[in-house]
Image 1 (tube, rainbow, N blue to C red):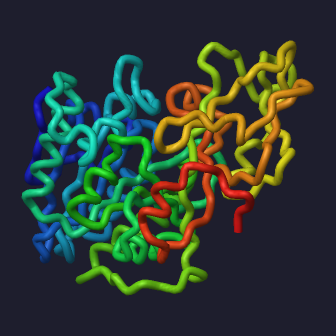
Image 2: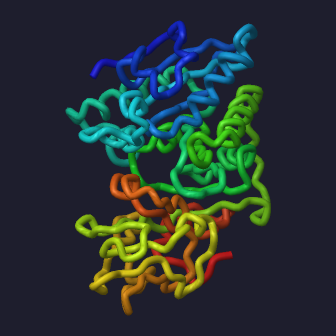
Length: 359
């Protein structure tokens, strides 16, 4: 797969919705857009083809707000999975998840691989670093009901301050590997922005205003804040549905039926005993919860008895979605706890067990 690096936007590209970008772009593309300050703001859109808020925000920014005036700062625009965007899908069958293919400083930076996407994104990463980027924003949507929030991969006050400009809810995560935000965090303040559901005008407007705000920044504050002023959450575990299990969100339509409006539990503390699903004809261990180190902590999170799946202790989920295909391709949800950004980093990163309670 050949890199596609452009020094200007192709004529007519901003006229096209995400579903039509494949007509002009053959694959993942990097576009340099010059601005007054040469250190670029990296903006990544469409790493997942059905998450088009970032592209819609950039269309408005470049087509209307800066069509006839200079950008205050250069932009390096990364346009991701245009072939999946054509069909409004996260990724196509046979494709990897683009946001799992970026080089990871601790795992695969120097690993030689024949995978074309990993090789391509490593090449793009090297080109980005040559430009000494100011900051990096990777814009996403989710299919469930979630508030807008920023996610970061390092406890760094510059990143926390940058995230607080987007949302008072900030999530710290170290897994999965291969995300763009984690790759860029080694070189500049880097965030993943979760902008709610695709197609929601509020998400587009929020992303647009935030990108423009970042373009206007001359520097990023690094002053520590009191703990109570920052809602910072730690990802404890990723939860999966058993691969061989039929499941749905309709009562008694499959072996596992999740409760209606499951995604309404996102960013809500669930007390012990919270009902998540009904099991029909079995009481098997149908969910799998893995912590940061890949350790199975399912039995400390969930009970599987009397035909139900319930929480065993206080848990706060994010990214719950009723989209069966997304769950199969990625996961059911993440589990979180609130953490102190002023605590020693080692005490946060090494936390392998679920807390007794969430603040």
